[in-house]
Length: 207
Image (cartoon, rainbow, N blue to C red; front, side, top):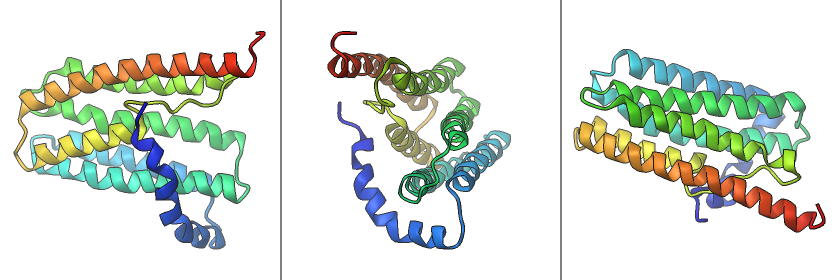
């Protein structure tokens, strides 16, 4: 299933010189992970507190780009510089779902937007990531299958937030996009379960 996640290796190659400098300066993967989570929370709280000022939603696409970079950086520090740890695995998954919720839920505070589709997107984002995390429990890898993985959500929500900030997209558009994202997230959840089971059967056909 096509996903923006497949572009990650090219993105990582662009960041590799910066990652080397961060490592040389003593920066750790866990520090980057927590930093991304904390800033996501702060951005979400700021927008939620002043949601009537729609121009603030422009912060979402700007932060989404930086957040994707930080997510790539923490992964590269962990894998390529021997900083992988059990604590890091917990922080990576928990900070991601917390950050997702913090950046999705403010859309519900836009005047005229329905709570149901926004809340559904926030919940399905958590459930789909949980389905991906469950892969190793059945003998498969951590699943990142699309069509609405983390990178895809960041792109869609960034475009939607830009339209809201510029006054191009009203409440009706937000509702419609959220329902569509919710449907794609539901399919992503099913797809990750299916692909995880398929991978397990291929690697352990007898089981």
